[in-house]
Image (cartoon, rainbow, N blue to C red; front, side, top):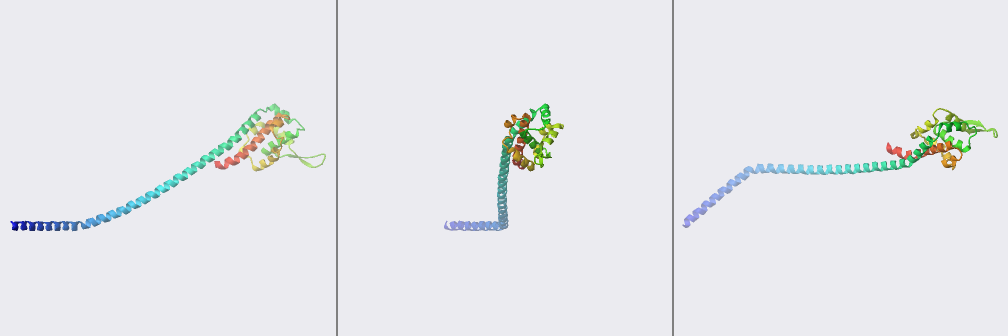
Length: 231
């Protein structure tokens, strides 16, 4: 009985040793595969890490681009608002000037151009018109001093006697007004009498034309702000 027990135990050990040996042989056989698999896993891990870094870099670039796009959009909206605000200031004056010119009849012009010695304030207004239309003054000799003086009324009458005086003002290319013209207008517009209310008591045509001159000056100043932002 005892002998059988030992024999069974011995056989168990033998079988176990054989199983362990077999497993060891199988493990040794699979060792190259395990090594290769480990290498592949390491390579894949490196690739995944690189892809993760690349993805982070792309995400960072996209975030920067989105931020830059927002800044540009905000700037564009700001410029648009500023331009609209500036134009809103000039438009009423332009509309008022157009209405003032439309209130002048051909008969009004015919009457004014026949005046030989116009009121000094009427001449002042026409001086402004001639500056904007790039029409030079004449030179005449002052009988009292025998010195040459600027004569703005003679070329003003010639201008009014020509064809389409009012149309020239209504169709005037205000975008082409120059800094030189504005500087020449400055001393005229600085005169407190260069306003419609004062001039209405002297001559209605001069009063309405004065509104146009003032509006052209106002548009130039607004356009200085708007034009660069529209480029």
